[in-house]
Amino acid sequence: MQGLVTVFGGSGFVGGQVVRALAKAGYRVRVAVRQPNLAYRMRMLGDVGQIEVVQANVRVPSSVARALDGAEACVNLVGVLFESGRQKFLSVHTMGARNVAEAAAKAGVKRLVHVSAIGADVNSAAKYARSKGEGEAAVREAFPSATIVRPSIVFGPEDDFFNRFAQMAALAPVMPLVGGDTKFQPVFVGDVAAVIANAIASPASVGATYELGGPTVYTMREILELILTETGRTRPLLPVPWPIAKLIGTLGDLQASILPLAPPLTTDQVEMLKSDNVADHGLPGLAEAGVAPTAVEAVVPTYLYRYRKGGQYAETPAGAF
Image: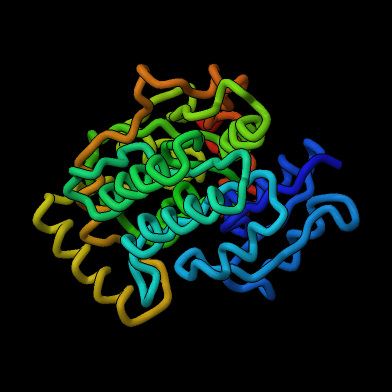
């Protein structure tokens, strides 16, 4: 086996695929998570003894330093889609990213891959995108040779994007449409994991920033229509004006402050929906990282079938992929 790679946030949707890709490449992997008792399955993604799980919180510098002890490389995947409790955008995306980068530099870690997001901008009106931009700046300051990876919407069997809307289509009489003309470039989770694993060993990735998008750009309206077709549902799309969307987002903010459950929409997400989420062609992407892009049409049907009437026993709807 090769050197040790510490993966912060390795038990999540993207993290599981990154850990698998690193293990397959022959690395020893240390998965650093806040609640190790919930990440026991991580050990089964590699050979016996190849993967270990430890406790770490990017908001606590001492725990980050312990997790990096003896590591040759590290990956920071930690992020939140909405604020709840102590998990704030500033504390996780900005201060947490700084803690990891500073600890990695101090520990003599050779390679750092920091996962951000398309749209990261210190001047953004959305707190999520602004904190991501500030996090990137903090990483560059503490660890100049770090590789920054900015994916668009990430899809896969356990995603919280296509699955969420498909579940909504199965239950709701109408589909609310916020930002119908906003563009997205969904990227397959396996492709993102491959880029990250390749970046650990690739000299070309040192100090680079990658923006990852799939082979096709969709509007939000087209994505919802795709989901409705694939699940065999007939639901009218109800355009939601921005003021009404903001009001719904305010209720979502209140829910997130009370319950540890993902709200349907937050005010910050409404702000983000006002901007396109597509890769910048001026930056390297999947092709430059040596990864062939996987189309939505090749993967999404393999898990959206469960939202059809009859589930796996339902006939493939007309027009589905």
